[in-house]
Image (cartoon, rainbow, N blue to C red; front, side):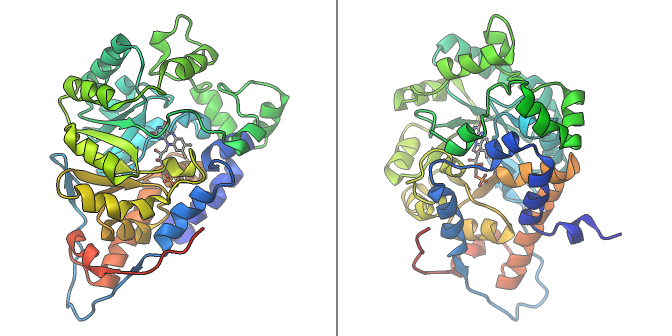
Length: 386
Ligand SMILES: Cc1cc2nc3c(=O)[nH]c(=O)nc-3n(C[C@H](O)[C@H](O)[C@H](O)COP(=O)(O)O)c2cc1C
């Protein structure tokens, strides 16, 4: 019997299988971008355009991928990005992701709009949990959420900045994604032909925004969903972030920054890190590819605060490319969800193994014993346009 790695050696192998096992409406939610999806493509081309120089005759080389970030040492500079409505994409996703993060010793970021509460997920991560906040407008609710998150064992907080308003996401509209999914004939028909997803959903129950339920009177997902739109986001400002800085005494990261001037303001107000991201191409089709934005941010704030990166990573070579551009750590959203969709619970760990093995291999091919050497392998090229 061929090993998992022989059968699914790439993230694209997991993506193909996942696309067959996840119902259409949930697949459209996971895989789509916004508009004509040019920023999804730019995320890919801005990475694949990057070429690395090779150095040979280095004798026995043992690449070291261990990375210390915010006082914790991880096995590899690869983390799990926050994903919302997780249980809709794959039943039990939050639990599987958290356990994989603990097992592989990498960070797992739980979204405010994930479908399992931090009280459940925090302990499963064994200290590797980060929490992502969509900023609540009500200060009392904000304080309560931060207290719950801290009590659940989270030290690192990530605040997402790049949703000033919902994006149009045309593919999701056409797939008639409802929050919550309405149990009409279309959904039942789509779910019925995806038995692993359907049985998992029966076992786990229909997904609900478990973090937020306590703030609405009656905790149905439909009410919570309306409440999410009305209560979170849309008002984030530098003043708001300074308040969060005062409230949170652990490492604090702003996610979704692409502009060097914004990154500098993150330094000025005392952030510990900035996560370069265009939300996986889900907000603005005219956005820079995330890897296009990375070098200028690294020039501006690299060395002062940590520069994290996501959007478009689909293999170990992409991780190496982002590190070569100066990222301190890399996160993936869809790659881990493709793993879960393809292989169930074991898929999150396998997605990591694919990314990590790929990174180690690139370090061998380029003669890098440590991650610090990757920037010296960067070959300047002219990026193509998506
Ligand atoms: C289905 C889906 C849901 C997402 N939900 C959130 C979220 O709740 N909070 C957030 O900060 N980012 C969210 N993101 C963005 C990811 O954290 C990350 O920026 C993006 O997936 C990176 O691009 P990649 O999918 O190409 O790796 C989501 C992305 C996807 C694909």
